[in-house]
Length: 326
Ligand SMILES: O=P(O)(O)OC[C@H]1O[C@@H](O)[C@H](O)[C@@H](O)[C@@H]1O
View 1 (cartoon, rainbow, N blue to C red):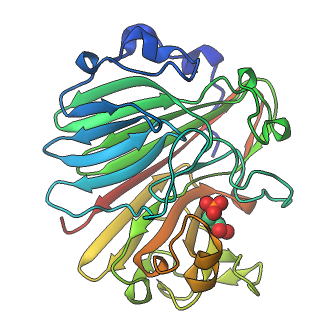
View 2 (cartoon, helix red, strand yellow):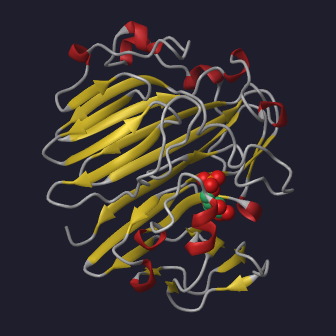
């Protein structure tokens, strides 16, 4: 779904709207340090090699890295952590944390023609700028902006897409985790693929199930999988699972008593992924024994669900995650 043309100045961040110091709006991406006094109560900036915002309010605890604008933790009040992160992950500039919610764009996997690199695009590999923080009640909203890509050296894969594309990401952490990604292509056509690659904790993936995809068509990307299939009933997990569903529906991950609801808008695809034993062993930052404890439910626009942007158009995709019984 294309949300209409948007003049470029609409995506520019106005300094007078920001709750952070002037230095933090400099798109020179090394210069992103906000002053603590400018952040709302319950938000702390932690610098170092992997700069991040730590959120701790009566509604939720969480964490957002500037590298890749990656949400890595979120637990609504009274509940255990919802997102999964590998014990083997690394973090820092140019590195996507293995877990949380990496942003995949402007293509998904290696793209529809399977010829793009790096895998899942470059937006998870660049350091974003913090452009706004605000607190309304106990909900904290953080807005991050991707750097001016053309001005950066060595953005891998930038030659495969309009180099002037812009991206903003608005994350609200409270009893619900709301993540909203807007991508604009100012001057050129863009066939956009994207995913909010959400890693969710489960106690045992072989006992978990995903409701809400009954009847949906899917491409099965697991070894030996067919391009076109139809889901029958809930999704359950018995082997490597790597599926791109054509679906705009809300899904619910059922893990024992816990029910994790993923609602979305601007998203024509839902990706469901668990690497299982063999593939987990092949991924260097994924522990060999960790796969039973996670499943990815990715709010996406991928394969046939890609978005066609005309010059000057934007698209916004939103995922909203909540615990049903909390
Ligand atoms: O290892 P990456 O690049 O983070 O990708 C992890 C997985 O991401 C999923 O979205 C893909 O469907 C899988 O094919 C892929 O293996």
